[in-house]
Image (cartoon, rainbow over the protein chains, first blue to last red):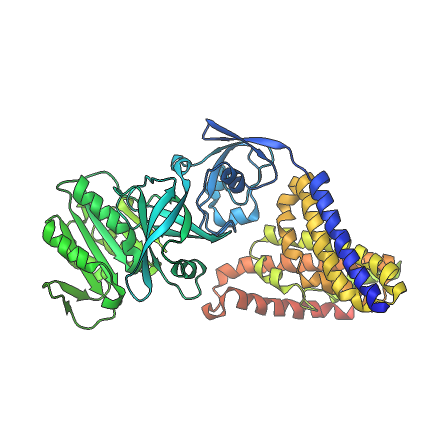
Length: 361
Length: 193
């Protein structure tokens, strides 16, 4: 009897609280619809009480996010022109004071509580959700795979060389991967994914099979090839080689006479991939130079083609090879520590700050 | 009346729930980085403590005790706290956006805060009457608020004093909390409770 009582009380209480929650959500804590004006021309009407990111997502506008809405990466920031509210503590922690005063807020934290006018970078309006099917999986090194993806819906993608797409295997867990295929192939893209031990997204990606479907958002990023005549210095560490393929291809084919150099660093030769391709490319194009370096190898390595793989860190290689830094423009992609060292070396060599672009991961 | 005031000050100072019982340490260490956020968190804890204590007290005395189901108190308290925090968050967000900015965002963090469950359990353990319970929960909440705001103030000074790097951010905070507990121990003689 007593057990029955306790069961009844427990369950009754749970049901009561649940009903109360549902009732309050349904009838008391309801919000009106508000209009959100984006960049002064596009107007959408959304139900209030949800974050800016989720109300934009419902309208097929995708703001980038690397942290999945936790308010730590700061990528989803928007400028609120009208309808500004006080910043939340999370926003004060992530955004610099200057930006908060200027009206910048985090899209994943600030909620729609009235009519809003916001400004977001124009490029995000062209960001779409893509669906594709994996046509080929290639093992590049012991922990890096390349996934060739045929686009299904929409069928074509427009991106700038060096930009990235975002994969979301489970809601809220997003990871960014650079597009590792050339721009001209508009109906397919490639992603190169390094398997991180216990990484949620890379483990998911490495478990995929050919013919599996994958959806992603993109393209994002201000890491892309600029239009000018400076010598392009690409610095890649490990799987950071991915965005360089498109950049190098674009320079060689669309900018006759523009020079491009690829500095590629890895621990050992087993961690490198695609180097055969770049070695043969040096033979075909005189404007392309390839300087690989291996950091955990003691002796200089000689490739059968006569090519030399230097030892040491990649920033030493940069210090050795670059002569006139002022004529260069640098694109760096790799682990943060490598990027920091290389930026220092590049600045020492005379490359101006505003011509150094990088993607840390 | 004298008893009520005694209970209130005892729960703020001598029996401070953060520094004497070391309850609610997780937000105490995580959110005490700046004073404004710490104050918001403290207010949220106070607010939730008073309301959950009232509800838990009512359920305990009028449902559990007459039916002889005191052993369910632990489970029921947790469920009630989780449910109430959800409801409070929804209502505060809808009707008091200003309050929501100052402490509403911390409400979901409190659902699993042990200080709040601890308060409900202490309150039945010590056989408080209804009025005593109100003063006790209010005092405990304010005591926790006092502790976290003091800690946030100390941590702001910490930036200038370059503590040992190997201690890390959380390590030095726990040591600081220990010192604060020692100093609060100094209050122990002044109240008979």
